Amino acid sequence: MKGSAAYLHGRRDIRLADQRRPTPRPGEVLVEVRTVGLCGSDRHWFEEGGIGEVSLTTLLVLGHEIAGVIAEGPRAGERVAIDPSQPCERCPTCVRGRPDLCPTTRFAGYAATDGGLRTWMAWPGDLCHAIPDAMSDDEGAVMEPLGVARHAVDLAEVGPSDRVAVIGAGPIGQLVIRVLAADGIASIVASDPRPHRRLAALAAGASLVWSPEDVASEAALDEISIVIECAGEDAAVDAAVRLVRPGGRVVLVGIPSEERTTIRAAVARRKGLTVIWSRRMTAADLPAAIRLVETGAVEVAPIISDRFPLSAVGAAFERLASGEANKIVVRPGWTD
Image 1 (cartoon, rainbow, N blue to C red):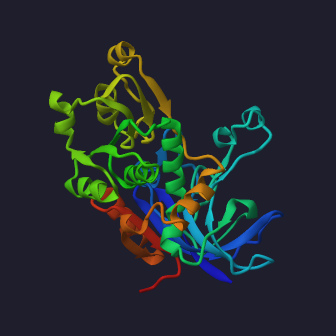
Image 2: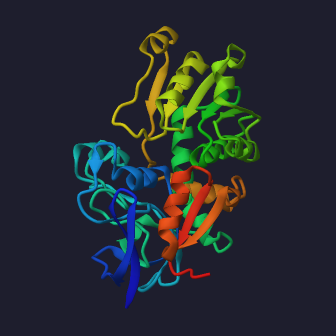
Image 3: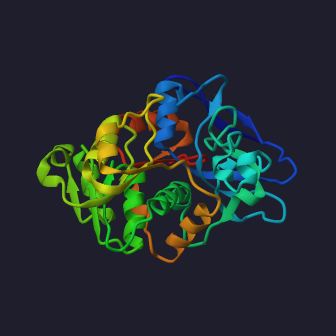
């Protein structure tokens, strides 16, 4: 049985092609993909032909925010959200208990591993997590970025009395705000240059929103103890370092376009800051994300702004590149 897949050929060059139904390897299940969310890292691949130090060397199917249904075998019919990261479990990093940082992890939609923008995908069954009936396929595709947000907040070690700033109120920033609110954090400030994202941050649970000009003003410097940076730009990192109080923590979540992040060393040293990089999520974070939504602690449906069929995947990526949307999802098999 044939399906379709969207292959990235080069910068801003994504094309549909026929796809044969794959045969799962031992330990894998066949998933019929229902919804794929587009992420900032997908935008880097689309606009730049790579991300960080990894460049496109072969045709690649993007998409790592994936929900689908298992198509055959004992789990046939089970609706799942997919953990896109398959660590090797053998290297020193994995053996030390940090498989989330495995240097040779197989990650969907990255390097030579195809992601979810296709009709079918075979993936390890233990990385396919059941989602409840009440959760839509679109919401299921948001479980991976919600897991990323959960991991970032955990790294921040936020306490109930902390005042937290989130720099960058795109989808990840909004999910970070929603996790913070679910954790009972009452004082959350968000900053973004786009007015529609500042409004979305307020809807997500921010108590106050600032433009970058507000952050730059001395009046904005008001005892921020933790900053979670979600923009991936030097200006945002600079704002985070300037904004946080002495002895504070800065968690860097955003992915920069260039393979370098610049921090004002004099300011960071003078303040004695703790700066932490957050990469993806741990194996426990996707199940935790599912529980957050299942229990009603976090609502993710409001962040989804645009839906495209796989046949319009090029338009979906152009919309992503515009920065005017919120969370964009693509639905393989949807023709409406």
